[in-house]
Image 1 (tube, rainbow, N blue to C red):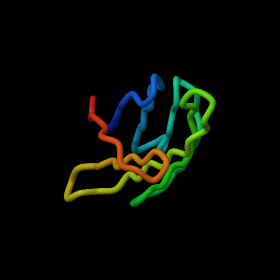
Image 2: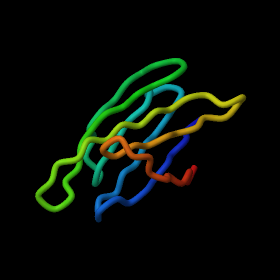
Image 3: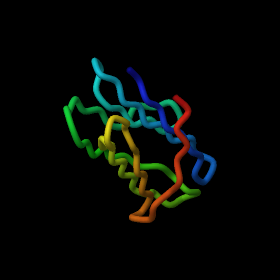
Image 4: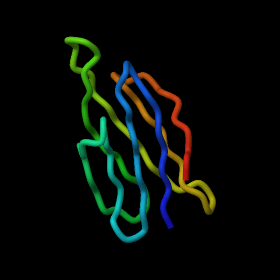
Amino acid sequence: MKSIWKTTYAGNEIRVENTWFHGERLYVNDELQDEQCNLFNTSLTGHLFDGETKKSIKANIFSYFIRMKCKLFVDDKIVEVTQVK
């Protein structure tokens, strides 16, 4: 099973993926920034550029009953993501 969440922030596409066999991955503009293989809760980190400013990214993936959920933060502020798969 595979879950994918996407959003666009300051012209940068952020994608978070969760799969049973390949773990969790964080991509910014199709560039892999973090990867983990964890069974329950995962925290992925990365960065993006908003003009000249470098901003930190944190994505938390966790199980919610039988579904997976994703929370995304850019510079410690929550950003809405859309689950596309």
